[in-house]
Length: 345
Image (cartoon, rainbow, N blue to C red; front, side):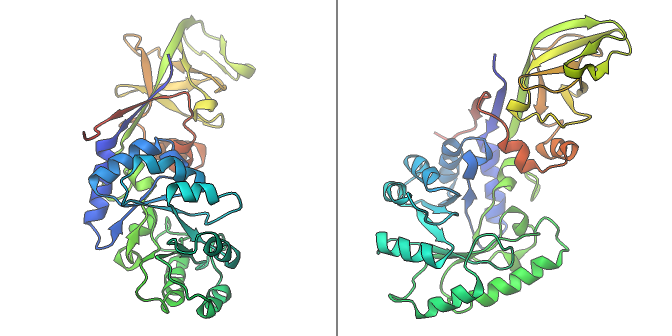
């Protein structure tokens, strides 16, 4: 029996709708990395039914895979722009690149002279995007530029008081001032929470859709790991690789089907899984495929234990691992049986 990942599409749509209704900007959806591991086809199809029409991925191949699941009038934007070998995927998907260098701009306009595109602008993160001098040189481009979207990305949006937020907002506003009629997009999930001044014309929520951590949203994900076997241990008996843990009392230990190949990081310390509201501590070293869990305090042996759910969010697990919820979600591997609920139609 595989681990099970239950995805509530209705909850994802509700998270999107709350963001859409709270701003005058159009709300898109970031579905890169297979919708943060939850299933890009299923998630995007549900959001399109809800009314989303702008979808963002990283690679042209993601856009080509996504296109059959979206209505014809849905736009797919590609963050990495236009790279060598992308032509076939752009032709198949009709996707729109967010071009981030003069070389990409020249290559795309040569191969797709009449196709829409956007420009990504480096407003201070020094990652992707046109630098100010390169952007200024485009004023003399021939034929004249007609981008359909201008974007940038905030480096410190998850720290609301960070000075970089105001610096990048001012930079993006200044760098795009020469194209006042072109729609603009600066805010991803954390940027949306910074307020209307960062919203411009298009929002790009990603993690806010999938964890409900923003705008009072709902967690739409539940991960369950099945119990394969249980055993009784005497005090002093160890569990797992390295014998780093030993029972201090007579204990019932469950071995679960799940491990670091399934996104349960080997580095996690102090992790509990849950049976209802009852925490059950992980004991011993987490291995690739198996986890030991102390279920001594449970009255009955359940079929599975909850890794992610109402009792414990991806953010809670991330805090134990010293990482972020994005990594927790995208690390949930292919061995989960993904079960979808709440889809319309």
